[in-house]
Length: 194
Ligand code: AMP
Image 1 (cartoon, rainbow, N blue to C red):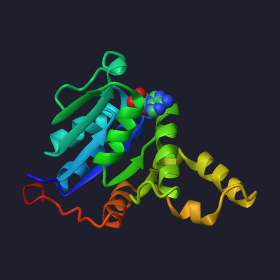
Image 2 (tube, protein in one colour):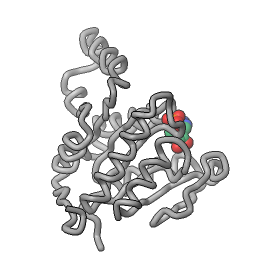
Image 3 (spheres, rainbow, N blue to C red):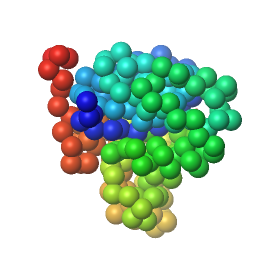
């Protein structure tokens, strides 16, 4: 069955300190599965990445994992993905993730998550794609980043227009629903999931 939408989730390969982050990752995966969606992600079992993928599968969603061969062991590739693509390089991974997604969202994570978020945001401002990009500011994790971005706008190194290319929200269901709808798609609940 064709998924209703394909959402790329960037998030930590670690679980983080606060168990609420793992719970939020499960909420995101369940939401994707229950709304007939497909998760596109980095293909690992570790941390929030593994949690969001397991929750998507458990809720009946499809999972597309894309992992560079050098990380297959390090990030414990999740072999029970609906599709697992083992690619040559990180660039191949990021390109394929971007191609397979209708929209992108960053959950709490570290340096890899930041890099992926900023890349897909800059690609949008350059017109390489026109897909919605969001930050799930769960538990205020991204407050410091959002505050810094405000400073960058105030200091005229960034514009309001660039900020408008990204949606930040702390409530997962509202944010995910907005992103999918902004992509022109409908996150309809599966009848068997109601
Ligand atoms: P992290 O947020 O650092 O836990 O990493 C999350 C994901 O980003 C993991 O799948 C990492 O493999 C990936 N990642 C790490 N470094 C990079 C990088 N330089 N470019 C793109 N992705 C990366």
